[in-house]
Amino acid sequence: MKAFNRGNFLNKVCESYLGNIVDIYTYLESTIFLLKLQDGKMTLDIQPFIEYIKEHNGKNHRAALGGSTPLFFKTVLSLKDKMKPVELGDGATVHTGGGGWDGRKGNINIGATIERWRFVEEVSNFLGIPQENFTDTYSFTENSFTMTGHYSREHRDYLFHVPEFAHVIVRDIKTLKPVKEGQRGFIQVLNAYGTSAFAGASILVDDIGEVVSYTQCPECGYRGMVIKLIGRVKGTEAKGCGATLGGDGVGGN
Image 1 (cartoon, one colour):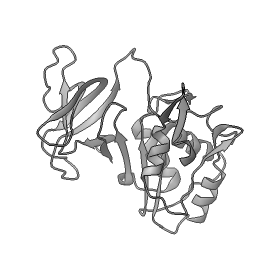
Image 2 (image 1 turned 180 degrees about the vertical axis):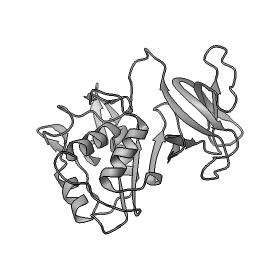
Image 3 (image 1 turned 90 degrees about the vertical axis):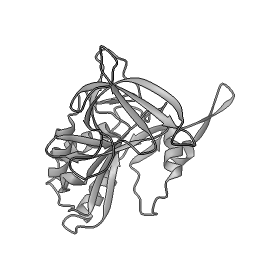
Image 4 (image 1 turned 135 degrees about the horizontal axis):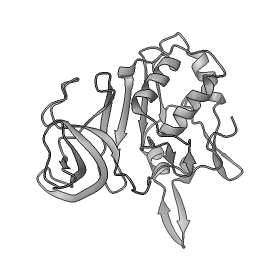
C-alpha cells in the first residue's frame, strides 16, 4: 500500500491520503496488511486474519486490530458462519477510523447502515475483546486534526474528545446558535494553525453531533469538550476520503 502514496493525474503529481497515512506510522515487521494488489486492483484477503486470530486465541497477547469499518464488520460477520468465536483477551484493541458507518466507503457498499453499538457488540463477542478496548477516530478531509473516541456501554456509542488545541461548536440546525449540553446540531470545527489563539480555518459541515459535556468526559475524566456523532443530514451526498477497492471489497473470500 505504501507504493500508492503518490500518483499522477493530468500530468500533475498527486498525494494519496491512504498511502501517506500508512507511510507516516511505524509498523512492526510482523504487521499483517489484508489489502493486497491483485490484477491492478486492491482486494481484501482475510485468510491471514483467520490464521492470526486462531494463533493468538486464548493467549491474551497484545494486539491492535482495525481498519475500514465496513470491511472489518463484513469480515467478522462472514467468519461467524465459518468458525467458532475466539478469545483474544484484554490485551487486544480494535480501532476504526475514516467513517463508513453508513455502510459505504469509496465504491464499497455492504448494503446496510452499521449501528455503532452493534458493531462493538458483534466484534467484541466474536473476537473476545472487551468493549472498553474499542476506539474510533472522527475527522474529514478539510480538517487538520482528529478526534479520538472510546466506546461507552452506557451511551452505546463512542465519546469523542476535542483536543485542547482545537475548538468545536455544535450549532442549532434552525438558528445556528451554539447548543447546550445534551443538545444536537451541526458540527463546526476551528483549526488552530501554529498558535492556540488563532483559528486558521473555520468549517461548518453537514454532520450532526451532540454535546455530551463542555468540560469533562463523564467516563474517563478527560478534561475538555466531549461530543457524540449522530450522523449526516438526511439527503446529503455520501462522501469520504477512504480507499477505493475493486469488486465487493472482500476479495472473493
